[in-house]
Length: 631
Ligand code: NFS
Ligand code: SF4
Image (cartoon, rainbow, N blue to C red; front, side, top):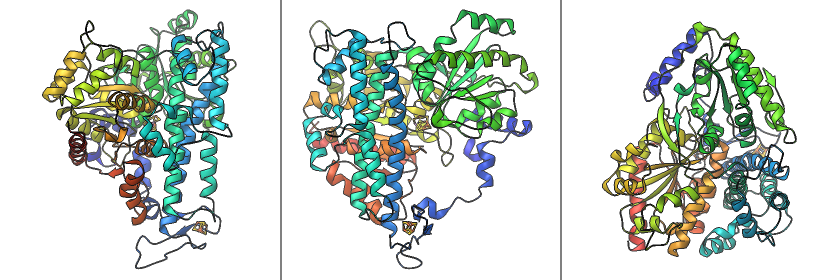
């Protein structure tokens, strides 16, 4: 285990030592056992798309095998592998969103799934062209909208409804470049087809199709997910929360919610307030029931309920190693299959709930949208009854936690911006103040910083370093996913973080009473960032690519992040990746990603692993955009 990797995270080292003492295996043990990772895989030049392979071709054009058995060269092989990552990433986001839409389809006045934001329901219904959207009975309208959303996954004709939000110039680019996404399922299926053995070999065509598929995530599945979750569970508002492993309370029954789909998490939040279950917990000697969040479920729950965040991706094992988690309950995505085994080193019960992500090794309680509360109650009862099985000698919860402010949905952000303007004389309820701040140079620009943790990068180091560098240079940051949790833990989501900013951003934070880094939610909620950027572009009458705004994923690891980068680039924003995707084996494909794509979308992928250098590149990028705008 390399200790220098861990210096940034003061908690990690102690807990990894504890794991060793407890005989528990962690990702670091497994990483060490893997020894050197496969160079061919890392370069993307191993193909196992058909069973004549696997074919690994040489990274060098001068020596070694140049083609696989079928004749596919390194450009084709790299492009196809990349495309399939976009397919999987798009599928993951969008298919979890499909479940959210199903829940809305099952919503009713007296059932567990309700419509909490009628105004937003009617607004989206009108946006999508449903007639009489302002007068129809609420649940009839919700069911109609849900059916329409389900068609976004499989409609035979047309493109995604939400594309119309974008500036016209952007919509024209998407049409012209043939990257306007059609039905989500269709885009994924057709790209899987294109990358089947003996189909597309042209890397440019494969990259374009990858962009289109990813677009069906960003402007399709993810945007639907955000808007529909808001309609059912509430639009996030500014609220206080806490973050880091110290939110696990040794005196309570601790339930760690991990995964992505707000359906399960919302039901657990409801059930955890059931007085009978709380009473039951007290009978077992606990002070109460403490639900804590991990990864994107943690983001969803903290944004809407202020439920505390136990940590980000890299900390899922550490939470269990504290010895104080009664139940780790999960649904889909980013869950280590190692958790059930790890849980057995402690008293923790591991419960998987989704037929799409049945994880072997401990309990399975299926979550069913038609009777969602029964699963939630069973999970809580299991946790409560497990409290007595805790081994006090193995309990060690680090005291570290940070205060944080979360909840910056587009609506809430606009509300905060209203504090900047004079409500007597200026219009309120728009993004104009944000545009004004950027145009006046008080803010130099904005950066969306998103994505995961990856053991290839020192934990949270790249996230935090990049954010700190940018806010120092008056660039406001909007964050989601595990990057948002990194910011939370580092204290960047507090009002006091303004002290780390340049003069302009500090002043803006003071006037709007916001932190310089805004938590916008889960990774699906990157659609909120797209929406906000779109509103600013529309308000200024410019294209998204003209704005001094960038995307960054400094520590990503998942296929979802690859799809995200691809739809952000397609949306016109340069996207800075801190970890190299598996494309280095093809110089031509890399060139397409870093240059070629710019000619189609006005933006490109930028690879830079050093966050300080990335910040320099971003500042140059932002200043260049400003010069071109003449501001
Ligand atoms: Ni995003 Fe959320 Fe975290 Fe990465 Fe995983 S939790 S959807 S994929 S690891 S940011
Ligand atoms: Fe090899 Fe071609 Fe089959 Fe890939 S598709 S495994 S390169 S023969």
